[in-house]
Image (cartoon, rainbow, N blue to C red; front, side):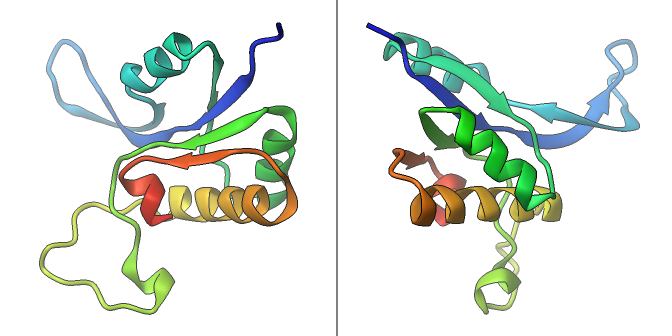
Length: 124
């Protein structure tokens, strides 16, 4: 039986210098290992989907996987769904918001592939 290829949305964050533990002015694509391990334990093949603001590229990534997992992470910008930010708003990542919203819209409305959201992914 062919194992399903599961695309997992990644996040973005500042690089950390391992010697000084200070932030480096360079962005990194990130994903917690727990997502990878969960897909492996469920019999799938995990593939990390990088943050990409081009909706066409996000659709192309979705076309190549059998299912999508929207991972947790930073808060979704409330302006995107008509709300105002409150004092409880944490860090937002506009690039990730753009990428995941395009990805989710495409998977939900233009494919029959399964889509699972965890924490932030449910908000998307």
